[in-house]
Amino acid sequence: DVKVTQSSRYLVKRTGEKVFLECVQDMDHENMFWYRQDPGLGLRLIYFSYDVKMKEKGDIPEGYSVSREKKERFSLILESASTNQTSMYLCASNEGYGYTFGSGTRLTVV
Amino acid sequence: DAKTTQPPSMDCAEGRAANLPCNHSTISGNEYVYWYRQIHSQGPQYIIHGLKNNETNEMASLIITEDRKSSTLILPHATLRDTAVYYCIVRFSGGSNYKLTFGKGTLLTVNP
Image (tube, rainbow over all chains, first blue to last red; front, side):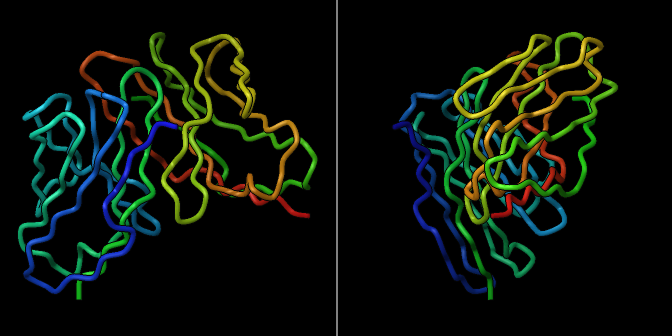
């Protein structure tokens, strides 16, 4: 069964910490994505990558960066976590039609 | 990508067909209609997609009107596990536009 795996299901971090959210896919997909999901705002695209070492800003990239050193791994980095980055973070990969999402990481910044 | 309009919520009795509508009146000729669903506290799950012909798979059927301005996702025998938010998305397939833009979707509640 094909999978997108996010390293943590729940995470609590302190304001100002550098936070790494990891995502790994086993489908050899070219494209990978990071979304955040907040009540009333739906899913919003943060960054995506269409190849190793390539990245594109999504709709809300401020306060985030990404890293794609290997095809199967796409990391989301919060350089200095803030309370307004408390959210559900969803990783996805795609090649062709369907997107496959991970189960999500619920991040709380205190 | 074309904008979509879905009802915010719908109810359905267990075992009955659930018919979820979506309007996409500004769809262009090379845009596909995609359906995803999100069960509470999980990531979205791909259901089905189509261009202009009706499509069916093991999960659902997709009926697209002849003018392509609206579509209906049909779950033929809804179960309690089908309770989820259903998203209708219109987008190009391939090219450089990889982004999938989610609206607010329809919360389908399947009742016993």
